[in-house]
Length: 287
Image (cartoon, rainbow, N blue to C red; front, side, top):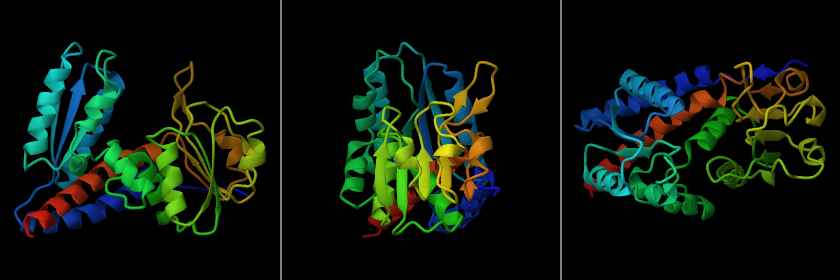
């Protein structure tokens, strides 16, 4: 068996095509979706991510701006900026690029973003809404995973799903999304004893730990759909996932590559959340 590749670039383009039509309708109502990002310091990975985001915004017609601050800026500066963005009717989505310098309290800052503009889906209001089954704005990476599954027409209801990873950014929200769609979900971590006993039963296996080669082909149920969220840089510079792609691709029915898989979907989902927030703003103003 050779697994079908779930290529993020291809699926993201499908998403962008749909977003362009939604943006066209918004602009007919005099609204251009707007996304603002706050960058503190000069983290190279953050700069690359924001550059890709700005290009994607430009390509589909979303207004984009990046507010840059030195690494030693104060929390008050960030909070003041967030207050202004929360009140700005031209900005529908706000993100604070992580990681922040250590002297800044990430939790406090993320909670200062208005939930209706929290397009990263990290505000506790949005995470809590997911637990209650009323998702408002979902975290982008797990939302991208679900979009990939839907694009590939992977059945979810009634399927056994295993999520390896328990972060509030990927693992936990992805598990909640799968539960909401009727899957039977098991959540594991890198510390789970005898991980294979769980992964070998999974019809849908998602791995988001940050440990290269954590899962190989011997741990995968034949025909499973494997979603590799991990991105790890080896000493020689090569990017790999948490799944040993070579062995896993001989067992799985579908698999995401690294790079070129889930990572491409994160920006697409960020823009989808921004457009959704803009649509909700228009609907609220018309009441």
